[in-house]
Structures are given as structure tokens and as C-alpha cells.
Image 1 (spheres, rainbow, N blue to C red):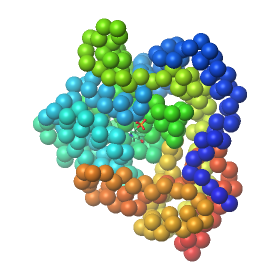
Image 2 (tube, helix red, strand yellow):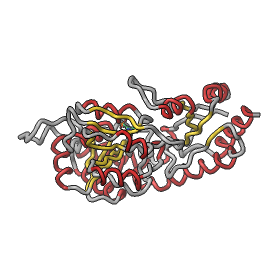
Image 3 (cartoon, helix red, strand yellow):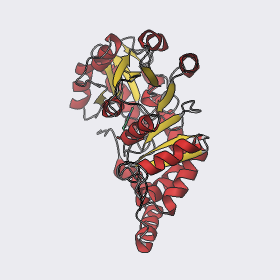
Image 4 (cartoon, rainbow, N blue to C red):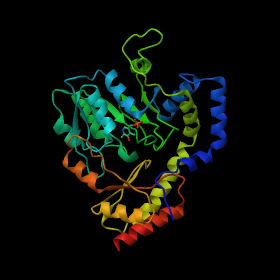
Length: 341
Ligand SMILES: *Cc1c(COP(=O)(O)O)cnc(C)c1O
């Protein structure tokens, strides 16, 4: 039995009729850049998240970058984030001219509030918790810290659409195809309750305002066609999350007796991240059995704290794409059990 990590084609086929109709409508009227579908998507997303405003952007990376920019983060500032994250979080900080300070993670792969506290200096301006794998960070403790020290809070929620309430001034999302709400290409967004930040990010994403720029901006717009597609896909998000939880439950049940591996707990299971000392051997064994997994290895060209290094060596992502069948998941579990016996 062959198991792929993602099944983009299968997900498309489930909603093909609706998608093709929308693509045809958008292309026929020629609504390509910053048209009604973007506006509608922004309303839909803001409602889904429970915030007043959303701004559609070209990627999660630019969502993070523009969030830092609009909050005035600049050279000489320090921004604390998790050492176990996709490189984009750190790129955004560096590209603002600020210094990324990496806090260590706990056993659950999420940023450790105690280590955030230890790393705060007079230069610290913001904290970016990363809700990795679709699991919410310890927000009670993190909000206590940002409130006490008067720091900005930005959620890197690029893996966490649907986890619940967000407390950041700004929350950042990605619609990269493999994300829980994936487009047919790149896409991203921010949500916030702040009107001023919203208006400024709208200027920044579109060359500082067209036709007469009010400031130096970028081209970070969400395509209208992607927005139309995301409007359709957002409707099935609760179903997608439900299916991911179902798959996670099968894994939980069938893998719980293997003492060599640690199982994850998550709200939406963007990833099903297991931890194993024999990660690389397990990866190869599953590959030989035509099961595609991904090593949860976020190694990048700057030094990370101890537990992050360990996670880079031990985390393995098991397939959890919603179109996968129960018998495929059971087959994966059977093979993992075989590996440890
Ligand atoms: C995907 C991701 C990003 C970047 O999103 P893009 O849309 O690919 O630019 C940032 N942070 C995290 C944690 C991600 O998983």
C-alpha cells in the first residue's frame, strides 16, 4: 500500500465543480487584483477568527514581515520567537533589521514562557509565539509576559488556523497549499482588531497606496483568484479539521503502547508530530514500505537552543492529509509497530 504525505489532486477533485465555476466566473469578468473576492475573503476570515479585520496578503512570510514593519520594529530592536519554527518567522525579523532572539521549546515543541522571560532585555520589542503543528502555545503565560513588559504580541498562526482564540495585536496566517487552509498557490493574511494597523498594512501591501503612494510599500497582495478559491475552501474547513482529528485519534489509539515514541496533542493537527530517538531509521523503514513521512527538521543557518536541536533530530511528521483513508493510517501504524517489535 502506498501512502503520500499530501494529496492535493484528491482534495481538488472533491470540490472540482464548484472551483471550476468560480475560476470561470472570476476570469470571465476579469476580476484579478484587489477585487470583491479579496474583500469577501477578508470578511469571511475575520469572522472565522473572531477579529474585526483581516487583510489578504501574498504569503504568511509577508504577513509576518508587514506585521513587524507596521508595529515599527527596526534595527536595534530584539524580537523573541521560538527556535523551533519554519525559517520564515526568523527571516521576517532579520529583514526588518531587528535581531531574532530564539527561545527554547518545551517537550510539546512549543515556545517555553520561562525561557522567553530569561531572554528579555531593554531592546526587546515583540514576541512571536509560533503555534507549531496546529497547537496553541501557552498564551496565558505569554500574555502575562507581554502585558508586564509592554511588548507587542504577534501570532505566527501559519500552522494554526482554527485552533481557537488569538491574543496577539496581529495574527499571521499562510495559505500555502500544504497548510490546513491551502490555496492553489501562495497566499497569506493577517487578522487584528486595530483599524489603524489594518489600514496601514493595506497601504504597505499595495505600494504604499495607488495611484499616489503615501509611504514606501511592497507588492504583497493576495490574488483575487486565490481569494475566490479560498472562499470556497474556507467553508469546508470545519470538516477538514474534523477529519484531521479523526486520523489523529487512530494514530493515538494504535501507537500509544510504543514506549519509544512520544505522541502529540493538538487542536487542529496541521501536523501529527511524533518524537523518536530512532527517527532517521524509522523514516527510512517507512520509506521502504512506500509510506511518505517528513522529518520535522527546522535546521537553519543560525544557532538554536538545546531542545530545538533535539527536536530537529527526533521529530517525524506522519501523513494526516484529510483525504487519506482509515486503512492507510492503520497500515502506517502497523508498520511503525513492526519497526519497534
Ligand atoms: C508556512 C509557514 C510560514 C510561512 O508561510 P508562507 O505562506 O509559506 O510564506 C511561516 N511560519 C510558519 C510556522 C509556517 O509554517
